[in-house]
Length: 173
Image 1 (tube, rainbow, N blue to C red):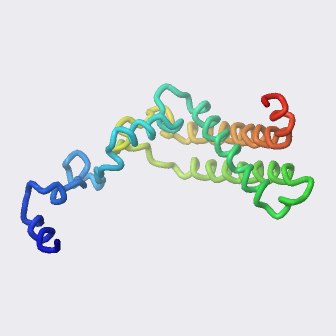
Image 2: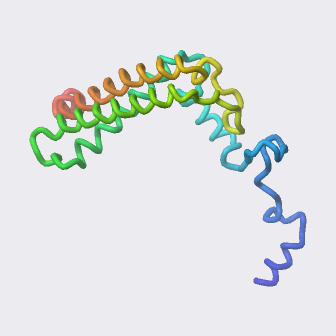
Image 3: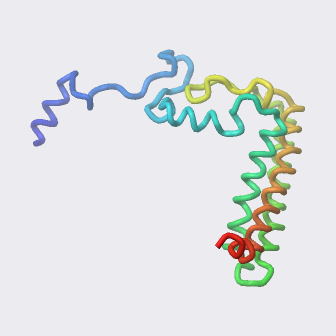
């Protein structure tokens, strides 16, 4: 068996001897690699359909979608795994903690906006980054304010659903 593996190393037709990682665009000066993961059609489709890269969205809409998703999923760990998880106010503590973290994240986005961030560059996975978003201090500040609105809204929705779970289950079955 070991001899067969050693013998296959000398066969160019063996698929195990083919290169699978290349410089992006076959130009080694770019400093980006094209791998079977980041250049696969499924990964490209998924990444390009995320709100940050989806074409045709305004900066505010991008930020509201991203903020709502973050506010919604941040609520759960605070409410169900936090120190008040066994109390009657666990959901309220989760809501307030999620809102606090969203406010901190908004502050971090505002600080980043004031640091003159570079424009988004094209890559193997995202060949056409959105031109209107993430290219100026104003667009980053608009992103941060809309992220705050979406994040608080997502946390409130998660709080409402968790607090009224029995009522919702009664309505649907």
